[in-house]
Length: 511
Ligand SMILES: [Zn+2]
Image (tube, rainbow, N blue to C red; front, side, top):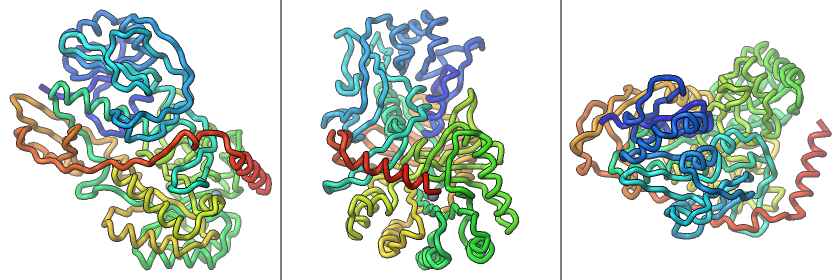
């Protein structure tokens, strides 16, 4: 049997998640010829369930697997529901999802009103419906609503101390929601005893990635040169998102940083509401960079802000990637979806807490080092890219010296952001397929890709293309996913949030 997932489209949120995970899936359009029996798992959309409910029911009673979210399960299973507004959830210890800690939804949940379903997670309201060997996992939220959500809010980030750093970031925990979905798919496959193979997130031989991003924010030549020298000392490839107001900095300083990538931050340190103002601001900076022979492929907006008009300006100015934590943070790259289409500009999420934010929360140097080491360990343990950022005028090179040495000890891939985006694009465009029959697994994939078999309990195993494996003879590597001890107090109102918001508003006005 050819193992693949069927995704009914349009379903952009799910398309983003499945692509991020590099799963083997095919899209199914409503009016096309389709046969659900070809798929191990089908993810419906509303339209498809409304028009083809009988086909779904037949599929489920014949060993089919379905993940139905709040848009589809009430129609598919014809059950009573009630609605609840959910801000965030911390699943209990021992749950399938307890390792994710605090998960932000800020969304309306639709919960089935019946006790004939099995509970997968009580706190998250995730249930399971079984019929013969078929299985439906019921999600009370909408993956499209959550993954395409564009709201941002000030959030506090976990550290082992009382006063926590905060930043204005994506309101929804998109990365964790992606991980929840992957875990559900993994568990469904394992029940069916079907192997789950996916494209590994990084190139062959790399377990993870470390990327160092610098937003110059009108720093002095001395500060920029000192940071550059430190990166050179530790062989760190950095990506500099430069401001362009001071042309001397462009001609004398940034052009000499030839070992690193030069990308674009801004002319005016602002994100505007209107398309035209965003476009003109970026175009002005782009022209200046070109004047000095720098062709920026990437863009990172001031304050990590993002809106659709900015996204559109980035597309029209031909950027290959951009990076804004108001859209997403600590997650795998993806192509944002707005104006009814996928953007041509790849979004590369970073960890949003800078030294400036730690300093504002009164972290000592040692605490800053521990904070970043904890983020590195956490992300590595969950296969999330480690992207940290810094402003040269905050100096604090002792902290970065420690972090760079820590990274060196891990022997991790350290490309510039552009190199990483090129890899991710290639990964996104490459396809693979696999077959499982009589206990044997065989995959076919492009030479540059690495595919891995994932197991719920055992971990992951590298699978070579065109080799026939006996499934029960494959040996796995297990990695323990770390979790932060996040608690409810982190989302309770704190007067410091208002103070921080006021300070940011003031900083924006000044520019
Ligand atoms: Zn900035």
